Image 1 (cartoon, rainbow, N blue to C red):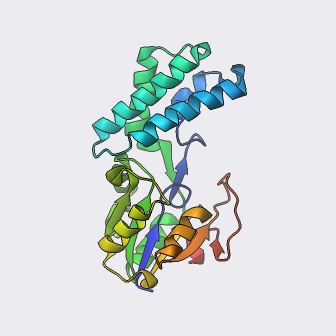
Image 2 (tube, helix red, strand yellow):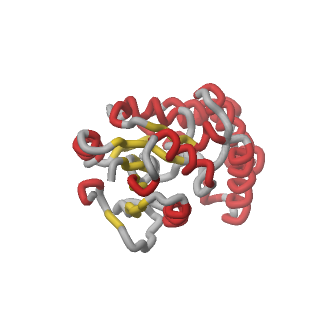
Length: 220
């Protein structure tokens, strides 16, 4: 083993609000007052917009994407009474506020330890602000390679994500380990010859079973 690839969300950090799309700025809106089916349909349509417009490279574009995302929600859910000013504020907060993301206690110490023995990389479904957030947490420099979905325009488990990671890491796939919180992403990595392990953090709402599983980075 010469290299380790890490997902970001639910592996290195988690959303302070408990939701990746709704920051604490959204707390003033009473989503519970809207029928669940209507809310789900609105989120599905807005998420489809993000998925179809995911190829971006700047935080400015990220802000514009999320401003459109929240505007779609406001239009579909007028019961929330969200104003244009509130939509701007939420989109700005989602893009530029590093406090929206909390890194697990073991991340810095374990990445520092592992970086002394292995080449480390990132492979994550994320946005341009991810690099700034990693820098803010002081862990950016531990990584040699970054495979971000926003720079490829596709999400895991698309093959391009793994092909890009293998090329950037400059290691044979069999000499790399990928740690992710989604089993489907790991099965796709295995198809490319990469070794895999599932991380299931205690506060991750998605619980899965996998043959090789850890709950903290210290277990690596």
